[in-house]
Length: 171
Ligand SMILES: [Zn+2]
Image (cartoon, rainbow, N blue to C red; front, side, top):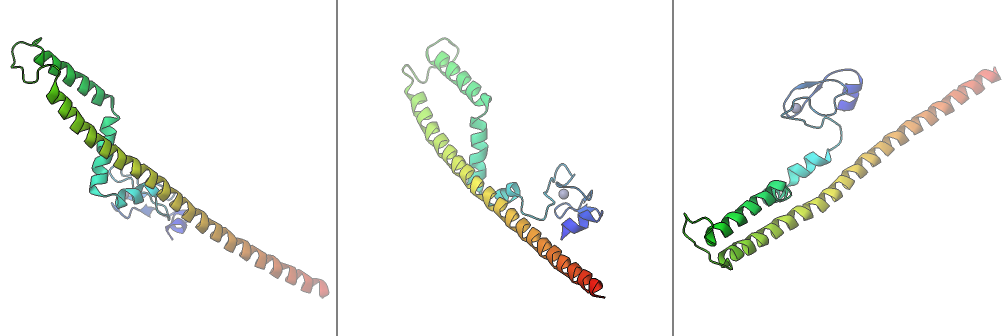
């Protein structure tokens, strides 16, 4: 187990980039790598590995929608659209007169896609929580078993010491 390797003061070699890390390293020191160096699966890495292409896109879209630029971009878009089609900007040709039916259609289509992406991203968030609790449970169970075996070992040592003490007293 690499934990014992770390505990003995030897450097931990990163399994992904091969970089050397200090014995107490938890994440790889290479800023491009940042691999978790522990004995147990790391939830963020597991989730990342299991995620499919469309889910990654949904996450990016959701991140962009949650960005203030998204609102600014739309505000600029609407202002320009209205300005062009009401004749405020006179240089260009009007292509969507009041009440801006084309803009309405484009926004409806956009809303459908945004809803879809947000729902995919939201479903992922709940599956993240399940995965995280699964991995937490695994660590807890393994830790409990390790402690149990240490406890058993201590008990057997205690019994042996008592037996030795008894035999010494009998002499
Ligand atoms: Zn690394």
